[in-house]
Image (cartoon, rainbow, N blue to C red; front, side):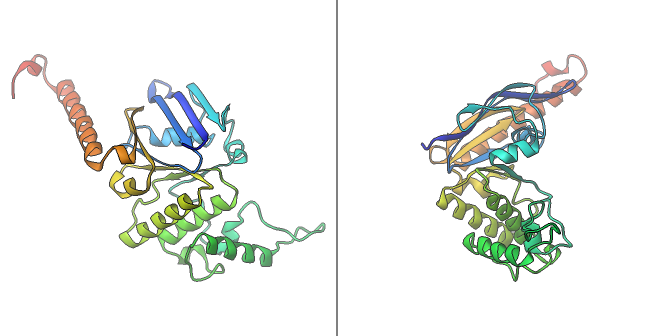
Length: 267
């Protein structure tokens, strides 16, 4: 196993009386791809926002590159190299590709006028996208003219170009067709082969991402209940765990809605 880049120990998060995370302990090695799986409401988004500095944990400890760290804000997390790519992608549809690639970190000509250096941004965007094997018609095309998969690839490429050490992908395959999903999976495989970036992929459809993750974590009711290398588990085992969770939840609902004493009646 490579050196550890990110670790959380017993992280929890409450919003008033609502507990979103109970005990989230994860670890991520350099160059590793970790699949963070769980049903809707399991706490995936809350954990992701803690790792990006958007939420502060109610308890637990975060370590980054071996040092205990308090992620004070989104900008602080990004300064360390933790880059999220959310489902909304944070792209501006009316801007072209290269302007989106350099959004909020534009290259300027020298001097007091602060004029955008479009030529430099265009050249660097083309080079970066070619290195990452992102296929688009042109860096001059507006983002709104691209497919969902192409826009997702641009958002990922922008984060990698910002010298990301940890890339957090929030449901990158949501609402995508097979062709677009394949494009994103190929991009993740390419990043994995290079080994420069550690990746956490948040998903609820584990069958789509199982093959290229190094390890799988399952988040259930705010707790990490499963941590295995993909070579030591299977889609069938994960399916069994999720089915058990579903049955337990269904039984809880049945008992809570049954008239007093009905829980002793056999079906």
